[in-house]
Image (tube, rainbow, N blue to C red; front, side, top):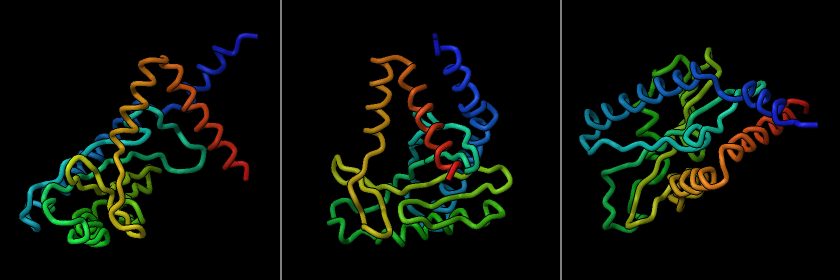
Length: 191
């Protein structure tokens, strides 16, 4: 039996719809603009840069059965003194607070200060945007984690690796990643 068509039909059912993708993009841009303005007005520092990462950037976001769908938008601080040791940078809780203050009241649901990111929840639309906060020293990127401090982390490397693998192996690799995510979501929903 040929399972190509049922798997492709399944992929059409679980992949994120165009309207949901557009909604996430719009929310991401509004958040970026609000954060940039807050940094410019309140911190009087260079505005941060941003880099979309995670499943949204790799086109593997799926429609979850019961949970929110999301986007990860990395925020890259541009004003830390990288000539100083990392131990002299602001602690991660402080940089998380900067972002929390910048997006306060952006949605009806208050943002959540998670260990590795700030989360903006769009309750009525069953989605959220996670904002992990990074800084670069030399050629190394560091993620501001509240429980572990500044740790080495480079999501760009993961995205590049996945996109190169998909280019080499074909779009079926991206669909397989979605199938596995859909299966995981289904199994978690059963419990």
